[in-house]
Image (cartoon, rainbow, N blue to C red; front, side):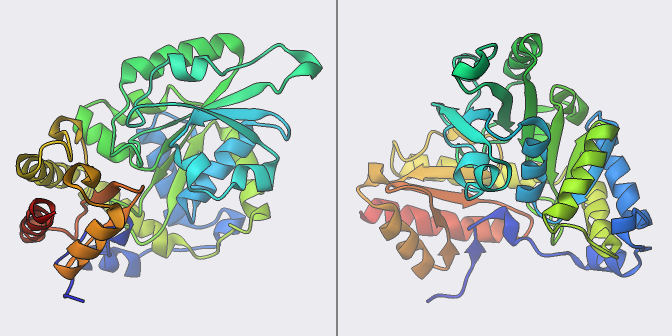
Length: 348
């Protein structure tokens, strides 16, 4: 196998920068199970403030942050609704059903883009003991499997208005909300205030080695802290990790625009090489999903061929391949990926 020249498997591959490691080494710590880690408290307060909420809770993973959010809103035997490609229903291994007894229904979407008609066609309330009632609508922003799609704030507000009238809560899987904010210019709090709870990830494009934050009301976060302990997520002197998140928030948010530009440059090159593999206009952030079937390839064949050129990618369907830019892929890596993709696509 060729040496890796561009690792585009996921933005979860990011490694702590030297400056981030220094911040971690200097972190003031305490026992977070007792609520006594000062660095964690600063991080939770900062993220909650950025997103327009009262309080936050630091978690080891994005999946745990999401699952805590779902558990807060949906009683066992009731349901959440999400789009059919949503991370909470496709990539969290049935956790909502296993841990919380939650049922799920999904609506179809194009690139994960939120159309208010989708969730509102499923929401069911006031049916007594005859049907499952909907407790929660889940929105993902940006949308991972949709190709980094940014959700329009107008569509979010339309759904929020309708669900509020029905007494249905909303949770935002905002693992890459930082990317949506940078790409759209919409303030983080403008997104955040439209949801009862929001999860955000620090270990993707922001480059922290671990950690997510769930935000909501103070009462909700107090309850989520109890469930975090039940789920085995209580942590001790975790300020060492929280310090990485704080450093990322201070230094790595605006630079996400560089990832977006590199992803778009790659998409432009692929579209020029083989029309139909990607519409560059759909590449809004750091994720590109190629339809390699348009070049006569399977996703497995494309992934293997690019790996032989030192470019690592990820199959997300029989003819769909995902590539994700992050702070460890620079201009040189992007050019290597462009050259490799062009050669493989045009040789098919």
